[in-house]
Length: 188
Image (cartoon, rainbow, N blue to C red; front, side):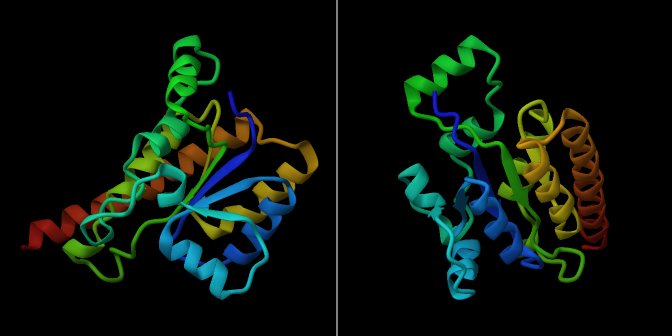
């Protein structure tokens, strides 16, 4: 099985992204990013290795970009419990590569409520990383980037306590997001 450090990056808020991806690349992480995030990285002239999600999965974004990360190669890599033999077998059989870090923040629904800004794939990625917090760290806010990079530089990995803290923060993030969606829908 492939134990290379890998980070999935899909953000709408690009604050601090240049420093984050530069640091992750320097730490040896292989970056996999959605089209918009990849474009931002390339436009910022950041010299990092980044693979587009569609290259990683072998499947293009479809439905005007609505479906891009919703793919077994992505979710298998986020959800796989590396300590379970059947998960390792499935990963090997299907060529699924694990992610150690998921960096996702959602479309700005609160500032611009609309059906178009109801995030689906990002929400599912956050929930998946929270579920598999034993193996995956989930970053949902630029305010988390520096502490995570510092810990990775110092210790080479995130502690279980850090992954749990990040999962708790992610749960609060998507709860607030879902409350905003609910409030908006109730006004329709």
